[in-house]
Amino acid sequence: MIPSAVTISLVEAARGGPFVYWDDLEAAIREAKELGFDAVELFAPGPDAVDVEQVKGLLTETGLKMAAVGTGAGMVLHRLSLTAVSEDQRTKAKDFVRSMIDFGAAFDAPAIIGSMQGRWGDGLERDAALGFLGNALVELGEHAKQYNVPLIYEPLNRYETNLCNTMAQGVALLESRNITNVVLLADLFHMNIEEVGIADGLRDGGQHIGHVHFVDSNRRPAGCGHMDYAPIVAALKEIGYDGYASAEAFPWPDPSAAARQTIESYRKYFGAM
Image 1: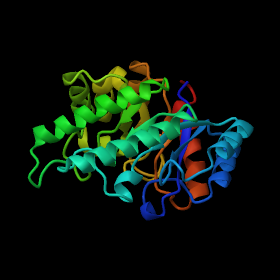
Image 2: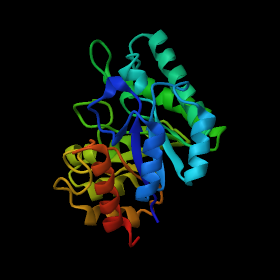
Image 3: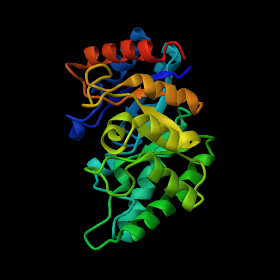
Image 4: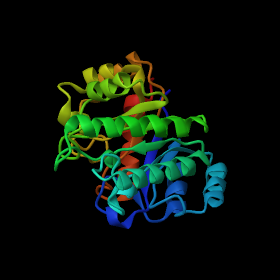
């Protein structure tokens, strides 16, 4: 059974982004429990933004898990990138990701690298940027290993990065550099833009896929766009995927309605798996 998760953002500068819940962490966790989610995924400003023991207490009380923690605040708030031209900036970016890996480890949760991967251009060649990214994934994947959790790397659509856009490109990056303890995030929104077929893209990712963002074609909650989920669910079953289906979606028309729509769609499509 693929467990469900829902996203919570505490980053004011990212408001308008694709996160279901905002602001009130405790209220979000309690509503997620009430609706029947298995876990939450947290996008926080940094490792010191929440009281870890308080959140652990809430998770224990509700029986929810922490599916993953995001690192995107490193880009949104600090403009840090793992592929910056400046070595000092790349070092700061890795240090921020390490701090979020440590933060997530308190909940036995992996960290996600998405926007912090950056892009090539402006004097930086593609091969050099991929080299910087690959080296960072080696280092950071090794750092995560001490906590018995993987690091999650997310290929993004062409408007957000020009490094890896498809699952096949993500696999090539991991395998060409022998990167270990790093898995891929298959975000259905990004895949809807970049893959010839989402189901085939999931097959391309295969055993490298360790996390899924469950969202519709327009980044609204599942069921509010034109995504065809039947072949997606079949492909996930075919590759033996057993990680989370986590809702990284716009809070449309509002957070509670978006969460409710997501869990209803989750039950419809994943309930029989």
